[in-house]
Image (cartoon, chains in turn green, cyan):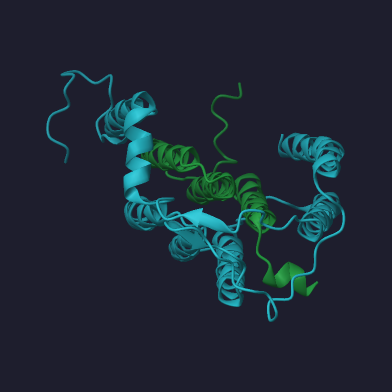
Length: 106
Length: 232
């Protein structure tokens, strides 16, 4: 058991990424505020990045870092577009509750 | 609908439960090697390499920042106020940046702090300033079924994580190149082999900025006059 504590390995980082991803999934599924849902998506992207960096360190391969950098840039683009959508939805409906956005249902 | 999504998630987890242990059993030796850090001889690395052997300081920093990241993530999705959620998300991103430093990804760690904890979070704070509306009922789960399902999923996750950590193999390469994780080596990778994805990302960012402007512009896009004039 003390070995699990003192000898930090690849599996520790994968476990950390798994926990962060699970938290992001729970936030994206359970919360009603569209902003919190977007934050949960960012959390999931970060968990994926932790996995990439951990494997890059284990394999000593810089390609994982390059991919992580591209993921960060795409996350920035996603955040910009997502927040713009939230703002325009809020302008049209005066709320940002994802459960009440049922215009496309009928 | 949400129940359907949860069911799909549980089904995916079940598939992983069958598949992942089979792969892990095929590759990982089942008996973890006990490391006595007090008696371990220092690893001798060749010139131009750094020793990355497990050290107490590295372990303590990892656990501190991992706990901070997980606690920050939990607080992010559980705060009622969106501003508090963003602040906890910033703490989470800083902790993740520290984890990158521990993984010898120095440049990515700096980018994480600048882009995530800086730029993206400022964007979130601006939008919260525009919306600024408290939720009446933030959580969607109600009833005994959802809570029971969530409890089972949490129990399963904790079980899997503990087993992964218990069977974790030791680091087999104690030495790492001094060039690993530096801006120089990342630039060499990005501007030689991966030049095309790099340039494609710049196009994606440009399109995203234009799209965000079109979406968030106050005047409607089908209005007469087309260009919409100055934003007011």
